[in-house]
Length: 299
Image 1 (cartoon, helix red, strand yellow):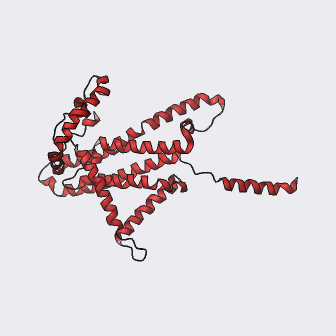
Image 2 (cartoon, helix red, strand yellow):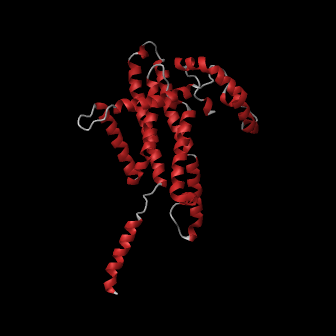
Image 3 (cartoon, one colour):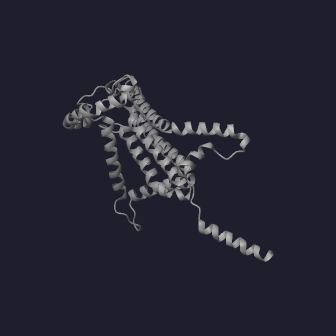
């Protein structure tokens, strides 16, 4: 199972510390409420149990490492943005403000080119995906931390968030029927109805698995990066404990940026598929009125 594919991690000290103080009440709550609910309403239908699917419930893992790391990533993201922003100034901007403005303009230009000028309202969501995933990816390059995106649980949650958001946009702008209708592609002649049905079926399946593909792509790259680092640095110790980690760290930073960019880019593409520029009714009326005024003398 993918849920168990991330085993073998050394638990960071901060995770042990938090579970030492908060693990017992969380464990008692899980045994009293969470586990029975999972077993009764989900796993009983598959002939298994929550403990077999998720692993044993213990005080030490009551709060999973990826949950703690992701909460830390959220806090770090807010702190980093606040530090970069500093005291905003148009006359004498600091390096942090210039960096933040460069990132803002880069994301804004991407949104404009992929979604359109009307896509500016999606900037907060898209930018949050970008910087939060980037911080999460980079956390694995520092001691005492691990990348929460190296857990499939976190990446699936991010993938589902992107999926829910762009479908919400599609339904709110086009209506439920209009949103579903766009899966059929462009309108074709009646004789090509089987082709339309085939396109609809393919697009429906393709959209349904997007949370899975988004999550697996991000998880697989970050998990593979951690495994490559661990395996290569342990090939011939102590020789592989000096220069090799530096090279692999640079590779890890590159992978962190690329995967944050890919996830954000795909989310923008998905939003662009369902979001369209609003029609300016006043402009349409003006064009129609101008057309009638020009055509009137010819009558």
